[in-house]
Image (cartoon, one colour):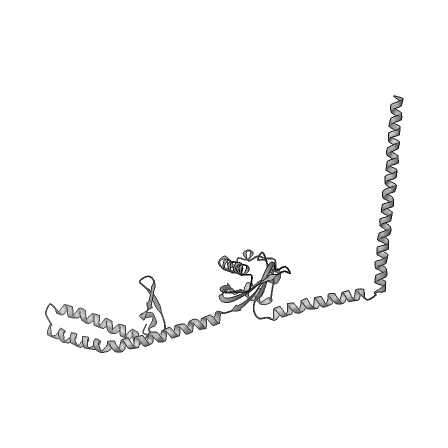
Length: 286
């Protein structure tokens, strides 16, 4: 029993000595580290003391950066075209005031960080699908891409726009996002459509004039011969057919009157997949 107590006392003494040694050992390392840190701090302080303009140069650099960013923001907001930026996931990262005010009708802080799918009231799903499809084409091409598509503006009107998309690449040529510039083509497209309709109307008027000119003389002859037959066949059974023939001749005369009265280009569906001139809508007589 006594031997066991002695052994326990020896074990406790050994552990205590080991702990004291470890404490002193790591204490020395800690003091060495503290001294190194103090020397580094002092060296940094001495360097700053030798370079009193260090802080002022840093502040000047910050001022230049802020001025540059302000200039870029001013420039992008001066451009009359709507502009926006997206990251690789299609999330808006920036835009100018024209895009935020005239296109989406939202403040920029509500646009930045949002995905088009998050703004269904401003970007209807059918239009969002078109935009995303074209953006994928740009990524596949890896270069500048343009396309025309309607845009629902803040006033609720859908207008035609030309999208000019360009990929944004990092220093390793990796795709990180895209930038888009929009150009309003609505007035140009409407003018082009009006010009096409005018050209078509001119062609219709020329054809209608030729038809009426060639049609009038035989139509007058038919009308005269029909009147003579009606007089000779008065009271006979054939007189009924003469009256029907007269009705059809009058109908033909009405058609030529409408041809001569065409003032606009109006069409109607015919035989399923064909369009013909709608004489009654195109004529000023109605």
